[in-house]
Image 1 (cartoon, rainbow, N blue to C red):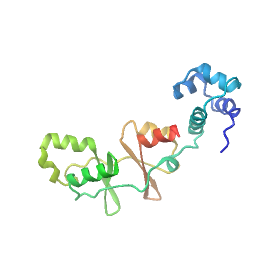
Image 2: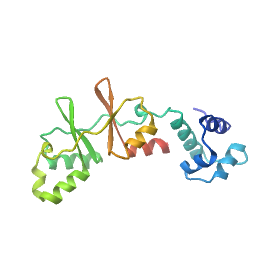
Image 3: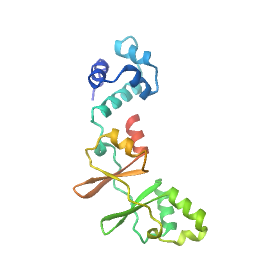
Image 4: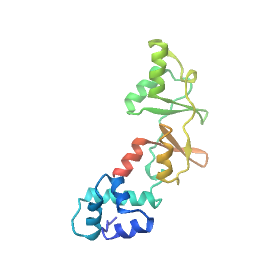
Length: 182
């Protein structure tokens, strides 16, 4: 993909985004955006990539399919807390869906594990996931745009991407941040 700096102004205006709003999203000044658009400065490639990522997000080109993580790591209801902790540590993840017979039955997060251990003590490590799992993560289609995904992640640690009734991937806040910064 060739990034044409001259396209920034045209695409931004077509989307109805002001220079000020684009600058706020990027964490830069509005005058910097104006200078980039006028061609009076030669911006860093990393900044140009971020600008195009933001524009693509607003154009709906960034969707669940493009940012989801797969395969999905999951546990079953009979998994012990100790096993969950070991899996999370080994895979560097902080939440997982609970799946039984190919159906999502709940979720488990680091936060729920910490709360359990604080309330039940260290004996909690032998408890089964089924005894304290939380409700399932919300789901989105593979074509859902990043804007709605970002809003949904304000209220949930993860989203499941479901395609034709099957789990296709999982999205976390980290995945969204990574997509916006790439």
